[in-house]
Length: 96
Image (tube, rainbow, N blue to C red; front, side):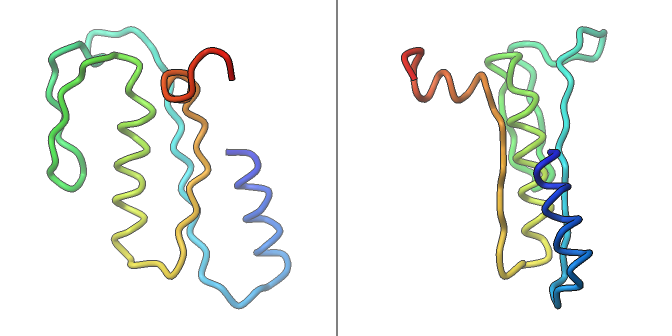
């Protein structure tokens, strides 16, 4: 999120003629009584449901909700800068 906040600061201080909305989706994987469990069903912001198959999914689920929120205003451009370490390792393999 730091690079996005830095870019937002640069855009705002340059007084560019743009409407800028920054969403920082930060998630902490903590154990608690209301933490996600495999088999739980989560209803997203747009009403779509997802079954939790892996409890390392918090970041992806929060990001999905943020992307839905970002699209609600029909922006001309949407930039997604995500760091999904677990998902990246699964998608690209351990050799990358």
